Length: 182
Image (cartoon, rainbow, N blue to C red; front, side, top):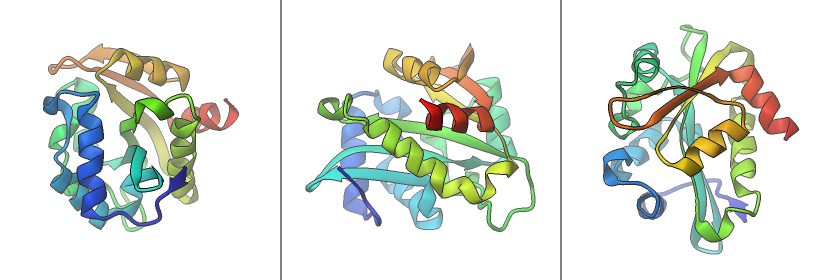
């Protein structure tokens, strides 16, 4: 498996198709919108491949205070996330930053391969230069597998949202430790 260094729109349509194997469309950001995130914020989406096949991907990025507030109150569906909701940590002085693990999807036959951890490591690495400026990381899970994943990496469930998902949160420092020590 290889982490792709550059993504194109075709990758995003493949990621959207992969996501539909696990989630209802009510929870999925359309490929064209996710591609817009990526064009402006290259570190927001990381994908892995095995030959020409997308085997998994992660969407993890800092979000605006308003999005973080909506996440904490259970009124934000990441399907509605726009590129402008993602914070450019290299130019913003508005910290601490709030990280959002929006999605991690691994193709079924790769789920026991260590790919999720590889993607998490890559995401953490991309933000390491500003790690001390992050306070919390949140995750919004839809499936039982997602809840188990969140628990494995130290997230604490705080409530069920208005769209039937579960919001989890923890300190970013604890998250990095849990990922790198597990």
